[in-house]
Amino acid sequence: MTKFILSAAALMLCATIPFAPTLAKVGDGAWAQCVWATAPEAAEAWLGMPRPKWMTRYDEPSVLLGHKLLATCDNSAANPMKPNRMPNWGALAGAIRKAKPKGPATATKPAQPVALCQTSTDQAGVRRVFLYEVVRRGESAETIAFQQYYANEGDLPLKLPQDLRMVPEAGTKTERNCRLIGDKGELKDA
Picture 1 (cartoon, one colour):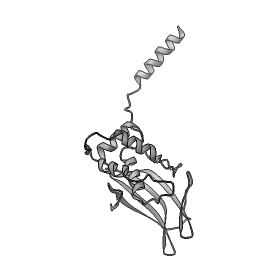
Picture 2 (picture 1 turned 90 degrees about the horizontal axis):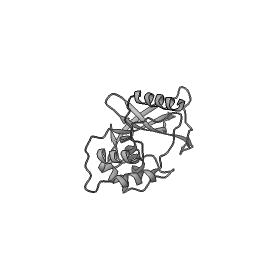
Picture 3 (picture 1 turned 90 degrees about the vertical axis):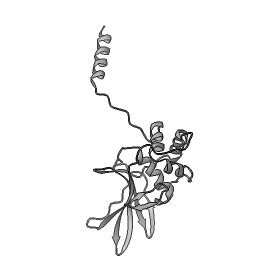
């Protein structure tokens, strides 16, 4: 009898919680369908490119376009305490391939603009990028979808591994420059 009362109480409690629609998660079927509905040209172009690797330069079209697809249909923000976490590009490509429409793909809803922002320092006239961010631009605000920090060893930029950040010294002048990511992975002035 006690179990029945507890079960009934739990059921009633669950019934009073407002319904929250499930959101698409990166790599699942709903996310991949959203990609085809909002950015079919970008999805088709990205599937034809080689998958990015850990050391692929951040300004390569395959990296830019992959991040654009991620940000287009995922409204979550990057966790600033866990930067530099690269996606599983192969799994994402598989999900997009699986959801590809049988006929020609056409956009059925507008895609949110996605930009690449580079934050750099100027040290003795030498500009060095220390942070790349993929930014989803909404009507009233922007959301950072991904962050990748870099350090420099001489003239060589080094991509930092997961959870590490490069923070310029106090008083160092920084500059942030953003450009939109196009449907072929090209950068356009914002």
